[in-house]
Image (cartoon, rainbow, N blue to C red; front, side):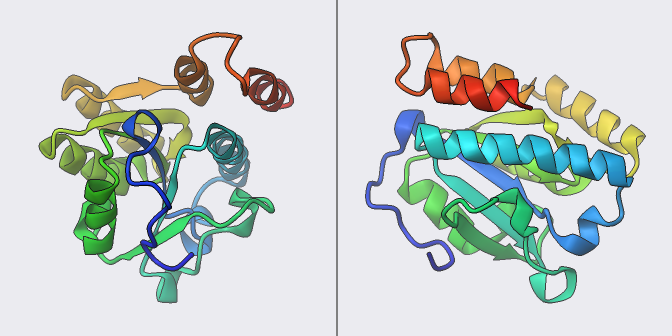
Length: 192
């Protein structure tokens, strides 16, 4: 799909969209390799689950001509999500991102990626200023300096942002073991 290309339906399931922010080579390389690998693994689980649950996946790329495109292992053979280039730290600095969110009547964003203390933080604040609900997937975000990420998470929690692990969010979306995708999601979680 091209940047910001529309899906076939306007209204998404429960008005939810998942956003993967700036998982690009030059940014991820600045992290501790073990932490970077854990982050990619958690985001990959989330990406697979979003596809199974048919929740739109939006991917932002900060100045990709300088920082590279999103790491391919994030998607691991899955169909390509919607990509949005940005030069601002908040995803809401991208007109095409804002337009997509509005046209598809998004009410809740699930945020993942880097850095918690910059792009995630500013995107969450901008989403809240637009009366959108925000959940940060705590095991799917990172900052180069962990104390910066911790401070940002504390501020966002105080501002009303939900901070939850990806498994908690997935099971909350399904709400019961009778959900048609329960077994597939459970298999993804178990091998994590």
